[in-house]
Length: 229
Image 1 (tube, rainbow, N blue to C red):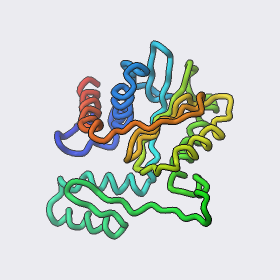
Image 2 (cartoon, rainbow, N blue to C red):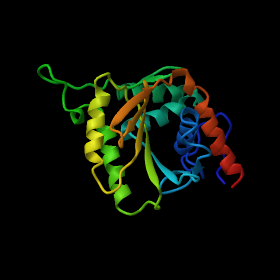
Image 3 (cartoon, helix red, strand yellow):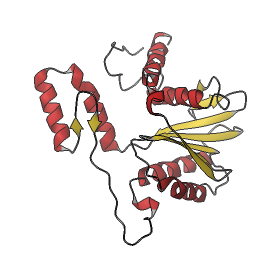
Image 4 (cartoon, rainbow, N blue to C red):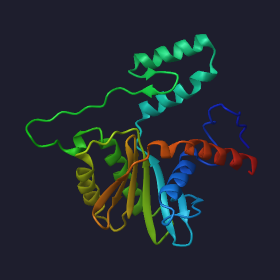
C-alpha cells in the first residue's frame, strides 16, 4: 500500500491510476445513458460490463508539459527558497506559474494562402499520433475481445473552430483497420470533443464549470484504492 499524504500531490505509482479514475467520472457524468458503473480494468483501461464495452484511456500531453505540470503541482508544498528555484526553472523553459494556474508556452502553426493547413502540421499532431498508436495496439491482439472499443484522450489543447472537421477526416482515415474505436473522446481546454467514427460525425460538449470537483473525486478514488488494497 502506498502512503498518500492529505493535500499533497499523489505518488507516482498507485494501485488505481488517477487519469483512468478521472476519465471514468467524466464519461459517467456526461454520458450517463452510455456508461454506467464503469470498472477499472486493463487492456483496455475501463469496462462497461453489461454491454461489453472497453475504453482505453490515454494522454496527448507532451512529455515536457507533463514534467512541467508535475513540477508545478509540488510548488505549494516547498519552502520559499525551493519555490523560487522551481518557478525560475519553469519560467526559463517558457512556463508562467501563478498561485492559481500555469500558462504554457504558446502553441502555434503557420500556413500560406487561404486554405487551412494540414491538420497534422498543427499542434493537434500530438493527438493524432497517440490515436494512431492506440489503433495499432488495438489491432495487434493485446486487448481482450469485447463488443466495442472507445478511446478517451486527455489533453492541454485548445481546439480552434476549423479543426474538428479536419480531425474527424483524419481519424476516419486512420480507423480504416480491422478493429477501430467507435467513439474517440478528446478532452481539450475548451470542451469535450466527441468523434463518432461509425457515423462520421463530431460534436463538442461545453465543460467549463462542469469539471469543477471532478479531479477531487478522482483523487478520492485513488486514495480509497490504497486503503482497500
